[in-house]
Amino acid sequence: MPSAYAGGHGHRRAQRHAPHHGKRGTHASRSRATPDGVCGTRQSVAHFRDNTASFARRNRISEATFCALNGLTRGSALVHKRRYVTARGNVGERLVGGESMGPSTADYVVVNPARAWGQKSVVSLLRAAAHRVQSKFPGQQRIVFEDLSIERGGCLAPHREHRSGLEVDAGLYHKGLGALTHLHVATPANFDARREWLFLQALLETGRVDRILLDPRIQGWLYREAVREGTAPEKLARWFHAPRGKGRAVFTNAAGHDNHTHIRFLCPPEGCQWPVDLLPEETPAREEAGEFTAVAPTSTTRRRQPICLPLHDVP
Image (cartoon, rainbow, N blue to C red; front, side, top):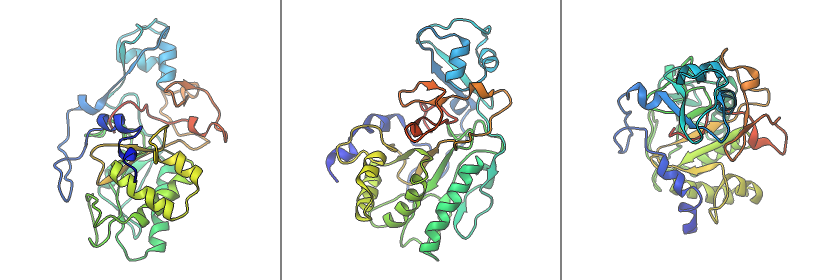
């Protein structure tokens, strides 16, 4: 891979995504639970001429919840560039009508079912992709799913995301290691690029993947595999930063993601289920620049489909 790949457009993002698993090694052990203030509080910056209503709409919470979190009166003007709280603990972002990945199956391993709840559409996509791999490569190592969300969503230590069933930490496919029950660091000797690309391609082809956070070196291995498999150039340009490392791509460089992928999904066209304090008119779509506007999902606005989480925090 060209050297521009690893240090491309995602270079600055990688610095913001600190590892969220514990002591590193052949097997990554889980960190001890962190205080609620670390993963439980989220903030966002007020824009010029923002008031409580416009800020709440853009950050996808009800105005009443936003005012309660910040001690404000509805309709109040906000201070330009000041940070305001958008979620604390289990207030602000939750999972409604979710589904559990359940216990481990013949297609995949679930580390902890209590932390493996997701939006129903997300769970269906993950199951289908894992089944696709195992059907083509029966009897080989199953993928390991670690954290999605808890049953009702909200804060899931030690993460800042994983609140509303749209993110998953999925282990990598390996060769020569036998059955795995936890995340395992990928190396050139043990990484199975063929099966990993088959899994991720199954998800990418749905158009429902917003971001995949992954170590840039592993992205290079996957890019070469995608080219070898004959993936169309226009898809490579949309999914990867290679070869020039410019523009927005689905794959994003992220430090500490050499033993798993952090996959962030979009809501389906019919939308996600929202908490009762999140009114339909306050469920906006995210534009690439970070603004939120009510744009109906079409073939030309696929990247603007609704998502349930802002993108400015460490996963």
